[in-house]
Image (cartoon, rainbow, N blue to C red):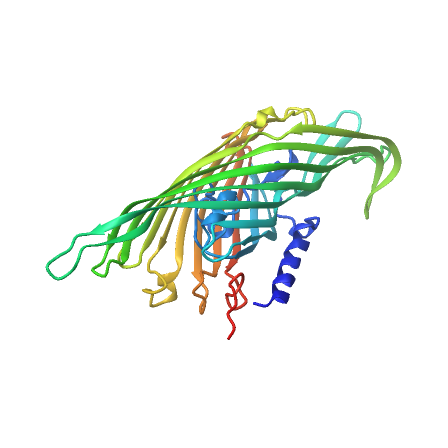
Length: 469
């Protein structure tokens, strides 16, 4: 790859990182996104989504882990990851139901790493939360008779990040005893790898929420309250990862043909101050055929809020088994805690509060054959299954939010690329409710995320020194 191509590619990603994030698109119709920061996302890439959005100990040589900053050190070379998601949502309350489709970009992430190097520089941009809802109720009053109260909202927060990760390798000697026809020999192998990483993150965006009271009787003016919030926060995420060789098998040529690996890891979000510039406007409107028309501005209030985001942390483990016939099996689990109750709730709706959150996730993936052993695309593809449950963060009078997600994943190495470039697909089924009341507001959604991982895509020559005669 020429320097001109490298500069062009890096400039494009830098421009995306410095953008406002408005191009991500609406990704939810959830009425629950009305509260707090909206629907908060995990930040997982498409391959991670297929394994339950694991991130604490999810260390991959060819795919970028966008949750744990230390994982980039395990990559074999420069990596670019991106994706696009689309979701169809069913919102149910009793016997009533509604449906909507949304979609948008999921992330743009980059890791710069020289082949064989120990360190990796990372940067990127991805959505952090989304709000998008339009709900209403019809009520009856003794004075004004029938009226309609409606809640609408839009916007969300994006997150840009820049970081660095480095790994340290430990080795040991594997001794082979001699026989009558061969001599004793030793081979030095990598027995364990430890990585540390950190990144600076900047969150930014705006949320717009509107509450309208539409009185059916035309002699009464309607009322509209519009709240616009500009959010800003900066902080750090630090992470670690450790990989250890538990078992190995060599063939007669003393080549490693089978192995068992154990990985442990974790990350934490630290030192994050958050500020909100909030403008609330009360106005009198009259609803016409073209929509609400403001006839009188009653009152406007501007207020600033500042607080610290909770210290969120996650830990997990993963076991990988590589067999002699090229099959690779990976299984992992992780646990996440976030004391959201430490965040002040006075800027939320009455009766709504932040609540401590906890998450449990499991994931499994299988690759039938390696690139050298596979005869078809189905054999070299990776298939994954995941489950994730999150409780808390927002508590309503009906109970705390409960989100349960099942996922399936599929990753196919691109033809003609031996560097690990791949096309990734993740399917997710999620249920979301406040408490366990079967007659309460419930959400059922199905989403598909299409992602890609490139290593690198200009003749695989990024950061590889050129040799000339």
